[in-house]
Length: 161
Image (cartoon, rainbow, N blue to C red; front, top):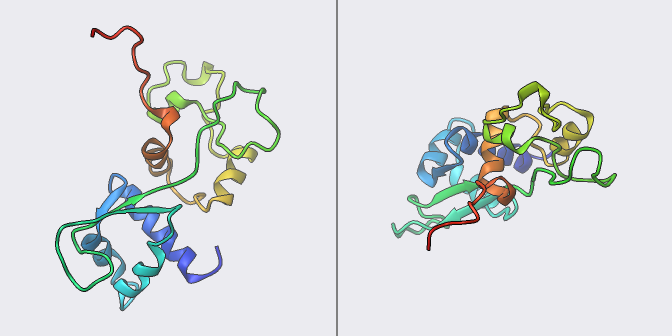
């Protein structure tokens, strides 16, 4: 993370994750205005990063590029590896974590065969590559829950029709 847009992008991602993964554009401007004098100008460039943010257009019409009542949602390509421990290919770009741990309900805890650590060499490298290494675990898990379909609740196979 070298240039200013990377820092702003990280700041926005952290704030979105601290607020259930999304904020109104107006709220986001308020959070960034103490740091940047013209938040609209700064945000308009950064929010176009399609791999980091999604903008859900609001209804309020203004001359700005983003409507004040639009919602900005955190997005990531980060995923949890679906392979069993030890069966993953060498250059896996996904986190090696227990899916139930991420969801907050691993019943096996320290007896679980899947990883419950973010600071392993592999996981730290994956987080660093995506610039997510400074997120708190709760913020990171929220981001994963918003973006990784593998973490969606399992659906019962025999639902009543």
